[in-house]
Amino acid sequence: MNEFFIVESDAGERIDRYLSEMPEGYSRSFLQKLIKENHIKVNDKPVKPSYRLVLGDSIKVSLPKPEEPEIAAENISLDILYEDEDIIVVNKPKQTVVHPAPGHYSGTLVNALLYHCRGELSGINGTTRPGIVHRIDMDTTGSLVICKNDAAHQSLSKQLKEHSIHREYEAVAHGQFKETSGTVNAPIGRHPTERKKMSVHARNAREAVTHYQVLEQFKGYAHIRCRLETGRTHQIRVHMASIGHPLLGDSVYGPKKCPFQELQGQTLHAKTLGFIHPRTGEYAEFSAPLPEYFTRLLEKLRSMA
Image (cartoon, rainbow, N blue to C red):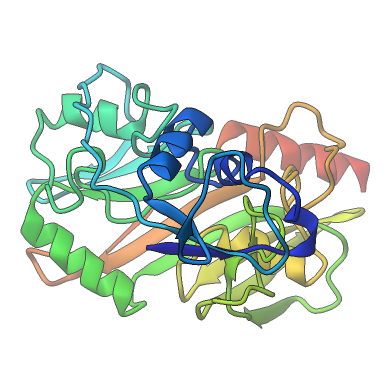
């Protein structure tokens, strides 16, 4: 059950249009069907898809259990950092979605993994997210671990929950940093007015902690390293924007126009991933080299200094 409260900026909008702009990406026709079947109510009462929202309205959405589509194995090249009988660690490229979702049922990392692993992936997260323990955004590159069996999945999930997995990212951020290192400790939740964003000012926020270190300063930008204690949606992007240093190329949390037009989304790379191996019980650590676009950008920034 999801619940949404209507703020002033959304008052007067049709309920089906309002819900169609949610990050889940449901179509208006699907939402209209849910409204007509009373899976969606306003102030605990059924409404029509044409209902105009009023300030303070409470929308409750109770989705029926979805029928999971069959996901095809696809022969897509993988950049494999490590692989054994329990796990596979890959270096995810830009513009690649991790798992199938509405609008992205092919060409995802999962489609490639199903082919490479011959379907031998953990089934804990169902048929659309086999083996997936954690995710990174479509335009974020770097290290990602996938589990081949349920025992490995349960072990990695427990480590994620306990915040014991070591995750370091590298990014380029806007602005000059006054301090060479610091910590952002600010809970993150869904943005109160912009539904596709996360925010440190959310009503139902969850603990989020990011440690950062400046690696190199440039004219107007900085190359930084971020270590996550928690793993909230868009955490680094939200936290750095909250202290006045949005990531370069991030049009959601930073400037709408990027001065480097060749960039595709935020300049963010999941560099290092470390955890206790689910079978051996020993600490294992993997690093994905900086992608070519990132190193070229650093060279360009150095030349501008």
